[in-house]
Image (cartoon, rainbow, N blue to C red; front, side, top):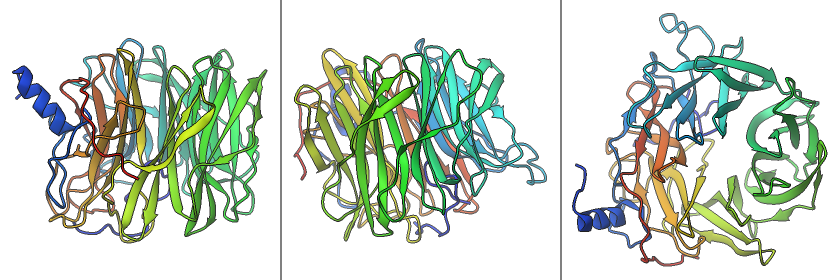
Length: 456
């Protein structure tokens, strides 16, 4: 079954059919085309220029081509770790449950460990891993069951050994999605759960010195008819405030992006009144959030309009204490995804600070109007001026076939400042089931004072 990023529930519909540069000037030109700098677009109608990056590489090698939902993180020393959901045990019979697997690289993604490691084998199918690095320690949070029945966290305590812990919920898990951050000596988790099939946003925290999780508590009680969903979380640089975004669902055609923060107080959080980030009566979904060293906030989300789907952006200036950009389109040209539910794009963010400049990069997926192959590609755009302008999107996955579907991307910067992307790539067979996890990384990083139009 084909999965969307972070979704433990299978999609119900079929998707639409669908070296090295050594000279400095060559590098600059290629970077401009590759979207690593803020520059002008060279794309023709229906296409986007290729990302200047390593060739996409299959890093999952799933025996049944059933690898879904990748996530990526980098440790303080530079080790890169990728996690995903896969069915590898019992590959010959195909009747064993899905588990969460990880693979690691000690050389910035050039090579990877030879065999993916099982995080924790459970009796239920495991989905939607969220991955976090705390110095050299790696933690994964995921959902078990479809429909979901349990939420777990596991820590890598040896190269091939993981310690699993349950995260108790006082309410039923409902199409649950989670996120995890670290700060003030604790892991902090948010997820959606509730009664009568209408979820709230719940929160739990575990000190790294503790061996069990407390029962989660409600951080936000839904106000929309269909409840709250898809929370994402960051923590302030001084590790005293949590910033959270999520989706409020009034109906299938009216969904809003909300933000609130909470001050850490002992083992609890004092949450503030939420603010709506999406404007007007829109179909807005799947937010993501990141913060820089000054506690400025970057938020992206998907939005569906009459002509297709867009990625929207908001920026909160910490010094001003206000949202100075709210609802800006990162790219003026919409994309299309699948023709049946869910028809959502799911953008993901990554930040890198260097030389007194912050680079914010966003990935999403879709295909353009006029594209010869109606199959999703992974797209990337970056900004070096806090989101006032964005580079023309580039094609990360770089596939051209009618069934070369590329979805569910995630991105992270390595210790050298190179940007890495992982995504779910169709590899033949069923376009609703047969996928592998692919990886590519940018060759160079550089900042240039070239800008594109500030789309509204």
